[in-house]
Image 1 (cartoon, rainbow, N blue to C red):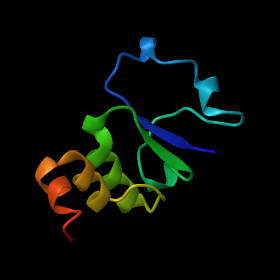
Image 2: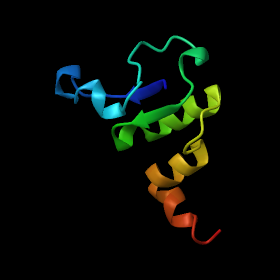
Image 3: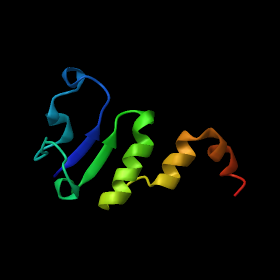
Image 4: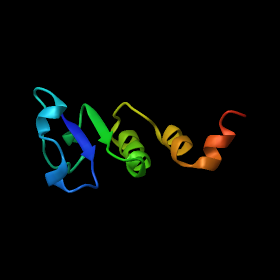
Length: 82
């Protein structure tokens, strides 16, 4: 399983890669073929960026519309009315 973790923390503060589970690979993403299983955003600031990457490489998860509704308070307040 290949998982991309968007992270703005120092690498030394992250848990051991074992928290991703057995068989997880840790590496550098250089193109869409490097990612096949998932994408994890570690902070709210990375949600929209993660959604854009998901859509570009075809990985399931929160899309740009959902991430925008979660991070943009104006869009969030309009969503129930729609």
